[in-house]
Image (cartoon, rainbow, N blue to C red; front, side, top):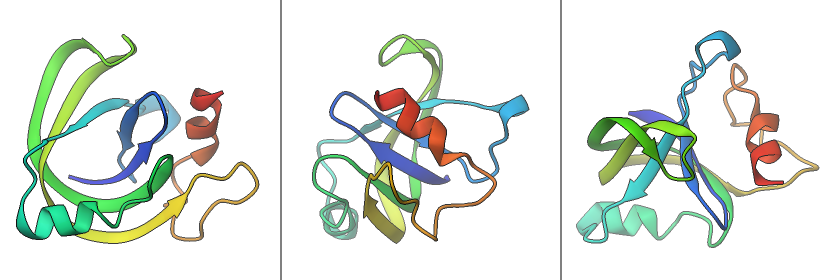
Length: 113
């Protein structure tokens, strides 16, 4: 899955770059504690604390929920990170240029407040 991964103090979630308001799907994300090799090396490049990461992941989808804080019907358990394209700290003043333009990053910031 190619996704924009967001990590905040309270939750981790993902948005696929093809998201749009009428088909919005929120995905609760968990990362396997046993990441190894290249996946662990890439994960260590993710921002510490709150941040954004644009990456390609492998893992397992679970449906049915609720997951996380109760607002997620899908859960994705990451067991491998294939490729890390970009990372950034979350900022309310600035949206990184690499964030896919067909997703509204503002929704991510609103959920944190």
